[in-house]
Each structure stands twice: as C-alpha cells, then as structure tokens.
Image 1: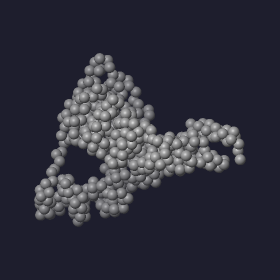
Image 2: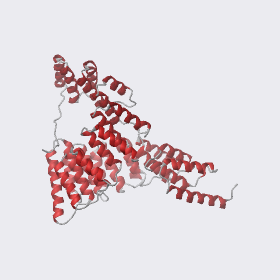
Image 3: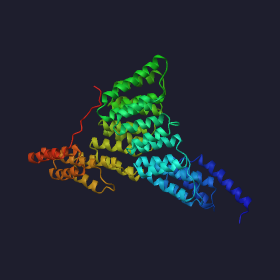
Length: 505
C-alpha cells in the first residue's frame, strides 16, 4: 500500500502530465489513447486526481469534436463528481445532444447529491427548455433561480427572456425583463424585441426598439428581420434599413467607420431583404476602408450574395477568404444549391472534405438541396449515407424533407413514400405536401389523392393543403372533385394567407 506522501506525489504527477498532454491534443481519439495509457498503468479512473478527471471530461464533452458517450463514462466513473463536472455535462448535453432537455437529468442528479447549483448551471438548462419549448420545466428552473437569489445575473435573465419568448409567453418574458431591469443589457433588449417579433407583435417590438438606450447592429437586424418576416410590414423593414444605412453614411461623413458587428448586421439585413444594391455598397465600403476580410465579414458577404442570386460575386469573396470556417462553406454550398448549381455545390462539398473542413448538419441540407434541384438522385443518396455513416450526424426533419424532395422531383414517388414510412421520426406535414406535389407533377393521381386527403385531415386549417389536393384533381380534370374541395374550404372557413415579396424591385 502506498504511503500518503507517495500517493499525493503520484496525484500531482498525474495532474502535471495530463495538463501538459491536453495542450497537445487535437482529437478525441488522442485523448482516449492517453486515458487508456493511464488506466493500463494501474490507475483506475475512479482513483484519478479530481482535476485530472475534470480536464479529461471537459475535453471530451466540449471540444470541437466531442464524444458525449465517452464523457458520460468518465463522469460515471468519478467517485464524487464536482459542481464543475456537473456544469460541464449540463452544458455539453444542452449544446450537442439530439435532445438537449436530457441535461436536466444531470441537474436532478446534482440536487440529489446535495450539490448546490451556481450561476453557471442555469443558462444551459434554461436554453435546453427554450430549444424544446419546455415551458413547465423552464418555469420550475425559474423558481429555483429565484430561491437561490440568482435572478440578477444578466446571463440568466437573458436566457429566461429567451425561453419565455420561445414558448410564446411574452407576458412572462416582459416581467423577467422588468424585474431584472437593473442588470439588463443590449442583449436583453434585443432578445425581447426578437420575441415580440416572433409572436407577430411587431408594434410592441418596435416600441421597445425605439426605447433602447443603446443599439447595436444585432438590434437593428432583429427589428428589420421582424418586419420582413411579418409579411405585411415589408415597407417598414425597408424604411428601417434605409434609416440604418443613413446612420452609417452620417458616421462616414464624420469620419467614423461602423464597427465590424454593425457592418455584418447590415449585410445580414441585405441578405434577408434580398437587397443586392445595398449589399454591394456595404461590400465596397468594407474594401474602401481596407477592413480585413475575416471569417465573420466574409461569410456574411458570401451569404448575402448567395441569397441575392449573385453567385459569381459570392464565389469571388469565398475564394479570396484566407480563412474559412464551416459556416463559410455552408453559405457557399447553400448559395450554389438554391440558385440551381447543384453539381457545383456537390463539388464544393467534396473539396471541403479534402481540405479537412468538418461538415455539420447544415452542410448536408445544402448538399441535398443542390442534388434535389439538379436531379442528382444517386449523388444525393450517397451524401445522405456519408452524413450518417462517416460523420455520425443524426438526420433531422430537414434532411428527410430534402430526400423526399429529391426522390419526388425525380419521379420516384413510391420510393419517396417508402422512405417516409420508414423514417424513425414522425413525418412533418410538409413532407406529405412535397409528396402530393410530386404526384401531381408526375401524374400519380391515385396516390396523390390518398396523400392529399390525409394531409387535409392533418392540417384542416391550412389553406395550402387544400390547394395541393385541388391541383391533383385539376390536373386529372376531375372538376366535380375540385368543386367539392373548394366547398369544403368555404364550409370550414379556411382563410388564405396573403403572399408578400421581399425582393426589391
């Protein structure tokens, strides 16, 4: 048996060795090899120095390529997990897991272990509730925050405002804002504005926007985006955008250059409003002022040009960027895909892999969209397999929707239906809608009628679903059935939503 002195010395050596090793790690596999080396040397995980375990845990849970299962094993083998370790797992699960609400399991375990949470514990937990619209759980966490006296932490306040906003409880979001007014910051104001806009109350959002003591580029963009998305306030969105542009011009007249955040926000607003002319002006401003084309600015420009349909300009910016991140690649791939350059989008994806950039779930949405719009069925299937098998990315509804669209556009309607029925998640009505439309295009009236009727029953108040079924009957010249659908719309008082264009002419 080791003496206390020797045992403490070994613990210290563990600490120093791991600290030094972690600075050299770049992948999770390297960490696993190092951990295996420690274990085979005769030191079981439960006997590791607490700081050593914590360092291994934070790398496996929060690195750029985390392994939550491995982090969970490390956590489970810790004899007495610390508050830091609990917070690390809560943060990791809320950020990375398919179901972020599972982070609450660690919170419950923490309380059962008689460990008191701190101000680092709650933001991730509340964000999990926000991401899943888990209002009741969010309210319970809010109650715990109040009991612990943490309701004046600005990060917690902002997360609570966001959570209530996502759950459609703007009254509670406003109450949190008012009660925490002594600590609120520009993020608090902007979160509340975004919440009101998201709930359709753009007038209240504008009231808070006009009351802001200090605005930043994100605030302007939030209000402009709120107007643009409301559909009926496009003119107000443009007026506000022009006001922001005039403000930037006044700054320039005074010799003041808008900072990077303001410029990026303005470029993002151009992207949302499809305002190519204004976007080009901002780009010229960036070049005239010799601002660095860093990842943030460059990606915003690529995204803006792609959404405005100027693929050539997007590609020039993309190629000129000295450093790119996954968002840069995603923006360029999406721009190519949405503008009908499916083969180029696919080619860029393979180049991305060759250059060592790690694609994410959003990358594959762009790739699959490009394949769908260009009829690249086999290539799309291959990309879907690569996503799952090589990158272990769990498909989301957007990926399934892209695959259904891919097969449907190619006339493989039955294969698309089989794909939907084998999905491990509940199909979204939009998937059925894509199938119905594919049936109309390719003349499969029988299946189109069956799916169209199913879709109408799923969303009886959605006018677009009746339109899809009507189009099936119109294509088949079944005028009596078409009249029946139209009468059904009248009987159910289904109101058609007005269409709006945000394209500047």
